[in-house]
Structure formats: structure tokens, C-alpha cells
Length: 218
Image (cartoon, rainbow, N blue to C red; front, side, top):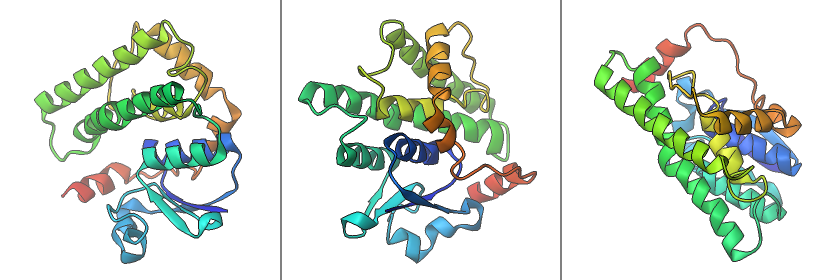
């Protein structure tokens, strides 16, 4: 059994979708980010960085894994699915996973922060992160014009990038004209395991969500 410590965020969904796609049994432990639970000693013993998601693999000697991309790699390799076994195939998946970890995720994340959560509107920052997010989505679109998925068969690379690309409306990133990206987003969103993963844990309507997020930035 795997214990998943998570919240309804793109990074959290990367792992819950991976678990659902692999059909691995797991327990969900929702972390209330606004309470600061992710900074408590019991959690930093699992993830020293104090961020979600993280897992503890009870079937492997209570082995903890943190950083969403590292968790995805661990799960896929342990299950022998969603990542090729051959050297080149694995590298292609890891390259697109790192594209999300080092590019799309951070840029979309900053676009979210400056558009929705920052206490003041700093338009140059908003424009910069929206522009860079759009550029990265154009990279995906260009690649998907020639490929059904990012790295051969459907893999953790698709899951990781999907979880961030799908929220483009929240920070106000325009995807008009990115038809190949739109096709890929729709195809992945139709997968039953993806739909289940997006509900782990279910997002609750919180009218104070933006104010809580702003308080966390203070």
C-alpha cells in the first residue's frame, strides 16, 4: 500500500493520476496547505522541502519519495508501466518530464501567482509569465503536430505536462491556434483514470481561497 500526501493542485494531480493509471492501491492524506501542515516536522520527515505531493511506499520498507517528478518515475519504474524499459525510450520520457518540471510548471505557477494571488497587480510580471507559458505550450503544440503523445506511447511525460497545461485559463494564458495541444488535452482528459485522479482529493469550493493563498505569500 502507498500513502499519498497531497492537495488538489497540478503537482498533486500528477501523482494521483499516475497511481490511478497504474492501478496501484493507495490511501489519500489531504494536506491543508493554508494551515501550514506541510511545514510540520512529521511531514518534513517525509519531504524535507515541505511541499506536496509526497508518498510513503509501505510495501517497500516505508520508503518515502518526494518531488512530484521523482515520485512519478519511482512509481512507473516500480510498476514497469508508463515508461519504456529501453534506454532511448526512457530518455525521451524523462526529457519531456524535465520540460514540465523545469519549464512549464514553474512558468505556469508564476503566472498563477502574479495573476491570481499576489497582493498587487504587477503587470510586467504577469505579462512575462503568461508570455513564457504560451511559448512553452507552443513547444508542446509543435511536437504534438507530429506525434500522438509526447514520447511514443502514453506515459508519465503526458500526465505531467497535461496537469499543468490543462489549467491555462486560470492564469489567463491564451491557447488559441494551438489545435494539436487542444486535441491532446481532450484525449487525455477523456481517460477514466485521469478523471479519477483529478478527484483525489476532490477540490472543495472555498470562497476564501484567493485570500488564503495571498496570506501564504506574505
